[in-house]
Length: 296
Image (tube, rainbow, N blue to C red):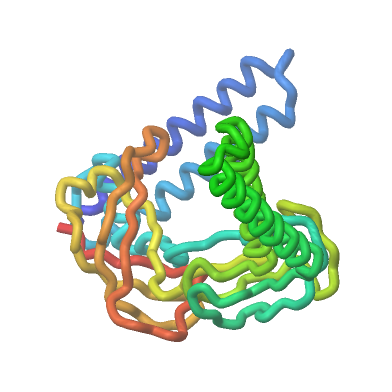
């Protein structure tokens, strides 16, 4: 019977809000749009119904606390907190040069290793330019060595030697540029993972900066969820909880690893990152579920 006064209080609060909106409609009917007024009343009814719906489960356990914090705890205890699985790392690989794609070494959903070539470009022109630059360095080196030898006999002066030295450095810089261009002919994986989506096809010509592949690192999935900010009184790093995943229908032990930098002042929640204990090959990024905590 201890729960009845609390339920009556909630009922009176909801009816008070409803009476206020009805009075607002009647007193402003001359200049208030009817649709706007009815939307206002419908919103109040929806909020009132939601308040009663979430408050009832906590009243069943005999708790007579009518504070907003207690209402929030009752709702969370009965339904849990929604959580989402995120990959450890995720990115979009883009072309660093314009050209024609010779082949893609992976397809959607396939796994790859770190530094494995994923996209290979047609690189004939770049390789030819590299050979030309290498020949230029060789020629400039011989010219500079000859000037150094002739300087010993007084045949050339410091000016000729300085110019040939500068020409050699210029050709070496050009060679370094062409070597970097040739390296861009292959897009390698920055870490091991899987392909989410391919944006291009073999033999397709793409400009510089064109998205090629969406990839992720699923070696470790991160659980993201938002908890009520008052929970910071007792929720700490390494706090354990159970995570029920909708897609698999299973429960997994998890542990808090990191808290967000700030509390959202509007919702009074804070972002929390957690990790699932153990390895579970059936789990995929994007799966969602419910986090169940043992609240004090």
